Length: 398
Image (tube, rainbow, N blue to C red):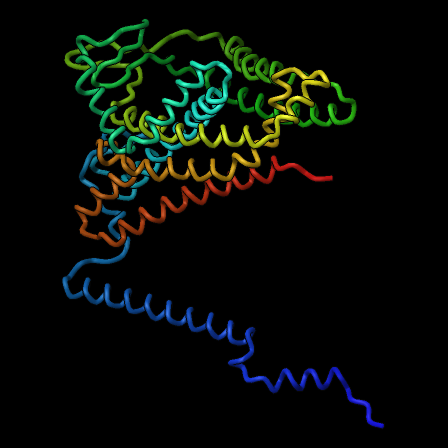
């Protein structure tokens, strides 16, 4: 009697199969082929581009960033003049884009959440007004909204001599919003450190309060205590440092205001357009997230005696955020990318500064590559933060 080795026979049968009939080997070959084709295509495009640039005597590389820019930028968070390099000019553009995107994201989250909750209000008027807001701002292209707000400042608001003066030290005109600020004092630096320390204390306080509630079931007034710490510590530092009250108040001199801080019409128009447009989409995301939570969850929470604020904070939002965060991430990314439309109304964001650099240096490929790289970094950073937050707040199943 002969006993066949089954394992050896199966291995022999597999080795006898031609590689083009083996799905695993065939998929590897296909992937290698695709990589080679993409590499060859990239090599062809790059070599052809370099050859054309050399034939037309056009410089390549990023050496231009060290040359003098020779153009002014209307708004800058850092010191800049036309004598500075193109590299510094591009940094100014990056910072301008960052500041409008960051402030826009904060205001959008607040306004979008407010409108989304109002959309679910049992009050008919509040619900209808929220619905009208969503429909109007969603259906009007954002570029038209930017033009509207830009025209509002330059065509409707008065000149500096007839500026709207609602409060002391605040002026609104076609030059923007001008308001007074406290004059610099060393106390403000101490207040900044106190604010950072307060934020750290609140972080550990919230963790302690959550653990305490899980163990004992007792609630701790985290919000009230946190508000007291955030206000009390900087206020105590201000009082300790002498309580400086000197203000830098703007005053009309000639045809414009001097002193204080001026927020230009271009920045304001861009910010309002981005916030009002994106908040309409965020409101729908928030509404859908809240509606995804079963009504029975709310009724059960109220049945055991939880207050409305506790129901929202402990029951509805933790479950709704699982639905809200992914589409909300897309909307925040859209806000950052839509900021590139600032060039249409004259705000010196990164696209505008890079465009001027391209026009002066003639190095379009490098300039466009920088624009793509910067917005890619913005998008990846926003996405990474939102993904981290999404994992942090997800419900842990037991």
